[in-house]
Image (cartoon, rainbow over all chains, first blue to last red; front, side, top):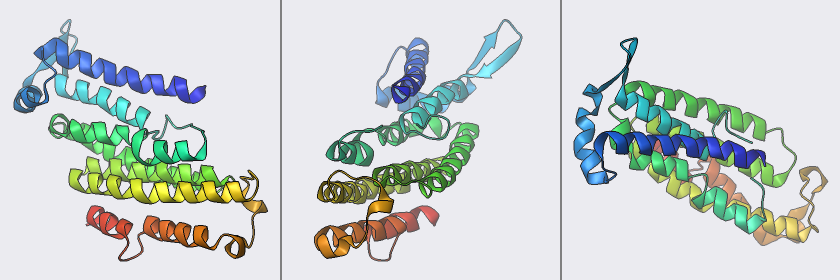
Length: 78
Length: 161
């Protein structure tokens, strides 16, 4: 039971990462993303001029959550 | 993540928990432009490798020991990914699948032979009763610790280099 709930947090990370990629680039194709990824670092998200966030690091944070959730790393182990 | 022993041999060795590392390898081109996240991955993997192997050293269940060892090796691969050594991580993932499946099936053989007893403290002198299982588990363990000329030696040497 605990393992299942912990795994859902990891799935959340993967889901949000895919959602962010699709909402910004309108594609999920690996070849297209490979061509785009070099310019990913220049995009910043602005939240009401309060602070800006690098889009690439934002996406990678969610991928990081997915990886440590799926591979049962520290914090998500059972 | 408990299950019957052949199922956990499949899940822990090749299919389920290594899916995270596989995801990391597939999206490597996105990750490698974000050095902060790579540093975080590297530290997190090293921390997990240390923590999981320390916990596994104090377990009494034979399957839990092997499962914590899997967790530790995955941390090792994550750490290698964080240091931009994706090829080494994939090589270690491949070799780890083989010797960890061997260890799990050997553990299943032992558990079946001693009438479903999983407590390590109640075993003893099993080399007299299960010589073939003893030899295969010895080979798997030597490969896991990186004994020269076994598969774990080459992949761990590649990561550490």
